[in-house]
Each structure stands twice: as structure tokens, then as C-alpha cells.
Image (cartoon, rainbow, N blue to C red):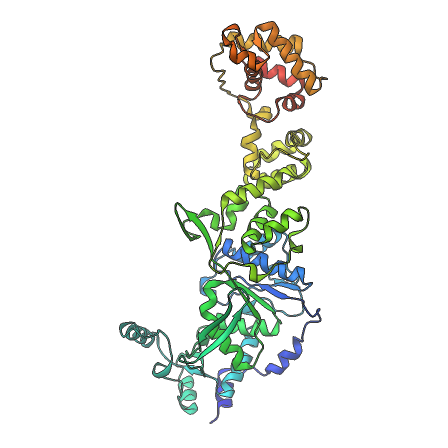
Length: 548
């Protein structure tokens, strides 16, 4: 009996060869420096900021090199798949406008690109073709170790302080005669397929990572599993090899936690004599926790989850900008010199990444977001808060739709110019910062006029609306009329004089404007009062004054 007979027994329906698939997936017709990147999440959980950072980098690398950015669904771990995770991945890509050039969406039966299927569970025959080739070449074998045997091996290795895994004398079935392996399979014994490693752990090889530079590793000597016994699907490591080879991925962006897998991937590519993609192992995303710095945690930190930014209503470009600032140390300087350029025009360089960790600061994101929103048009702010409220505050969305033009007037207060007002950090706080502008929310109001009696307050408001308010006034004329009224009522209009002679006055022009402000809004601090009153108009002002 020979290895080909063993391979045919294991894969009786596999008739294609590696050469057949190489012909089906030819080299891409792209420019010499074009990058082919892939966003390849596993639907075993919902996206977090640790996924988002490589997504942004993948997208930038492809766009700035006129390459290809594709989406690959790595769903081979079927036992851990989370319902809705695939759909959420798509929603994030759409939300942040980083849609892939190539993809496959199973629910809509939509595929774009010539290198699919882009869902790993649909590529089973392709993987098995490569595995069958290894068995025929004597570079892979069926392993019949039971779970109990595996547990016993691990316990012994841990007790003896040896490396955990199947290698050397622990690889019990590595050299099992072909005829015995065939008989075991015919007997119905369960098995996995393992790589027959040719590595020597005591021998080193060098590897060039685009972030960390040249690194040295011991060769892999573990007979790693490459196909699982239950469903015939490959392990992550093997699927990674086949897909990146056939899809002609040029750059793999992934977290530093995958550095330990380099010896395995190096050997897999070497086994087939395939050229490896270039690897960019990005730093861990860190956060400041008191006086210490630690890895951001999905369990401890709400901002680790991408849903956090959606619920808060951060503009998508603000989140991308924040990620870009930690992805490359020179991004902020570039942005200052190119305030209106798309982020994809930035020349991203892995060499400008920190290998020790990237500190993600929510305060910094808030500042970026405030600055970003401050430069939007009133229409853009309105559309942003409306889109957010339709999902998270349906009642407010109806108010916004009923008062579209009025709302845009509100959002236009102190907007534009060299120093626009930076009121809003994210869309979810716009309601709490503008609620008083809407009559629907101006009910059961509590006022605090400080030391001024209700009678004095009403006297000021009544006199102002009857004798001094003019809807046609410019801001200068408006303020001059308030000062005229202050003189008539015994309030100082000159603050220096007031501070020097407080006993002569009931208060100052500041007190009078604050009384008007509180009567209209209940607040002592608001955007420009003149602008608020211009938006309100006489009828609403009179109504608010009458409520005191």
C-alpha cells in the first residue's frame, strides 16, 4: 500500500490538484507596488477596537497603493460562531465607509471578485486538495490520538516542565505504517490530520516583520493539526496559508499576539515552497488606568467594543482619525498640514508604528470628535444626529423631523469662522445640550434666579419684552437696548464701575442678561443668547416669559 491510497481513502471525492487551483486563481493584474490586503474576522464574537485598527490599516494600505481590499469570513470554528456576528461586521464596514472591493454576502447571495468563495466554510474542497497533496508527499499524516491520550500528554509535559504539544516522541502516529493507518480508518477510528514537521526546535531562522524588523525564532517542530476530525475543515493556520496564497494577499495586518504563530506559518509556506505575504504585527491597544497602563479589555472597558462608538454617536471619521493617530506617530503632524485631505492619502508606514503598544485615549478621541463636528455644516450636524436618534432615541428623531429647519438654525449657532464653537462631542449629547430649544421638552421647568426675587425677575422680563425687545436688531443694537433698560432699572452697565461701587446698583448688565437667559432656557450657560433669541422669535420668547 502507498500514501496515494491513504490519501484517496481519506479524500475520495477530491480529484483536483493544487495546479488546478493555481490556474483558477492566477496572479492579479495590478501595479507593481499594489497591496492586496484582507480583513478576515472570525464570527466568534462582535467587533472590538482591536479588530478595527487592523481594518483601518488594511483599508489605507490598499487605497494608497491602488490595490485590493477584500473581506474574508473565517468561519471554520463553527462551534464558537456567534449569531449576528457576520451581519454586524458588514454593518461596521458600511458605517465607516470602508467597503471591500471583493466580498461574499451569503444572505443576499451577492459576490464580488474572482478569488472566492470568500467564506472559508465554502472552500472545504480547496483546503482538502492541499492536505491530500501533503499526505501523498508524506508531509502530513492521520493522527489517532484520543482526547484522553492528548490530556495525558499535556499533563505529563506540564509536570515535567516541557513544551506543550505533539512533537518528537509525543507524535505517536507520525511514523505509523501506511497500511496500519488505512486499517484504522476503515475500522472507523477517529483521527485528525497533522503536519509532519521537518523543523528542529534547536535551529533558528530569521523573519522580517514590517513593524518589529528582523526577528529570530526557533523552527517549528510541532506536528500541528491541519484538519479537524469532526467536519473535515482546516485549522486556522492551514486555511490562512491556502487562502492568502490563492488570493495573492501581499500584506497581512494582525495583532502582536499572533507573533508566536510565525514559526508555524513560516514552516507551512516553506513546506509548499510558497512565497509568504509581508506581515505587519500591530501593537496591542492600551489604555491608562489610574497611574498604570494596561491592555484594553472587552470585559472591563466599554470603549473596547465598537458598539460603544455607535451608541455614543461619534462621527465615523472621528473614530478613524483617533485610530490613525495611534497607528502612525507622524499622522497628527500630517493632518495639521492637510486638514481637508482624506485619511487614505496619508502615506502609512509600518516603521512608524510603536512595537511596545498603542495608547488609546478617550479624551483625545473626544477632542478629535469635537473639532470634527465643529467644522461640519448645520446640514451635516442635523443629518448626523437624526441618523443616530432614529436608532437610539426615536422620540427625538420625530422632533427633529418635525422641526428640520428650526433644528438646523440651532446647530448653526456660532458655527463657521476661524474659531467655531465646539459644543458637541458626539451626537448622543446634542439633545441634552439643546433640549431647552424645543417646546416639547420645556415643561415642568424649575428656575433658579439666585438672589433675585420673582417680582424683580418679572419686572425685568415684562419691561424688556414690552419696551426694549426688537426682533430686527443687530447683536450690537440688541445689547445696547439691554444696557438702556439696565440704566432705567438701576443696574450697572460698566463692570469696572459696578465692581468698585456695588452698593449703588441692584446688580449688573450680566445679571440682567442672565435673568433673560434663565427665563428662556433655565440655564446660566448657553451658546450666544442673541442667537437663541433670534431663533426663538417674539412669540416663543413671550410664551417662555409668561411661564415665570
